[in-house]
Image (cartoon, rainbow, N blue to C red; front, side):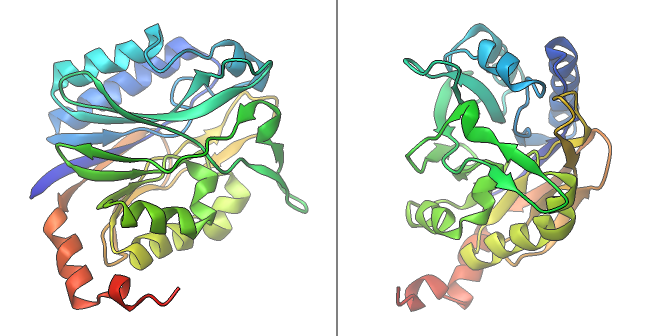
Length: 270
């Protein structure tokens, strides 16, 4: 099975209307270019002050998210919304950071709540405590779609290879890593970690990202470099900077060919 997939790069802010207008047009452009699987970055609908993000949180079938359901149905595509703010019942001042997989019939196929939260204090760099406003998820999620089986993750999850091993054990052929990777950590680790996850799991990898400065109280400058990587670990499409999308032909047969020629899954001892 071969088809075209696209990843979208955004520079989102607290201006939700501008975010929606931009991502809608880029999704339409990617679909017009032939993509039937389109993935957007983490914080697709809002990237601003964190208390505002919590206030805007909705159920996964909330009115903002329904707009993406209608768009996927109109375009006839499988749409991965990298993450949105999902209501967390009983949690005062916190929400979930949730990825949505929407089918070409406009229905929600799966949702994934980010498990690993970005609580870091990098020397001379990034200081951030995501857990102040985000509740962690607890379940690894794969989604069966018309474009194959997707293994879902979000941003900081990338640093935990055991999650991806679990996703592949559940049948994942394509790994999604929507992100808002910081400039400092991205320069050091983004490319090598993404390629490593693709290589060690022998899977396609879609990594849509945020780019540039955001109006989140001066805490965030995203690295960009959204990309698509094949099961051999080769970068087949990339957007270095700026908003836009890149597109590549996905050959799911390559997953099986690579896994058969080098059966690391059968050679595992731990």
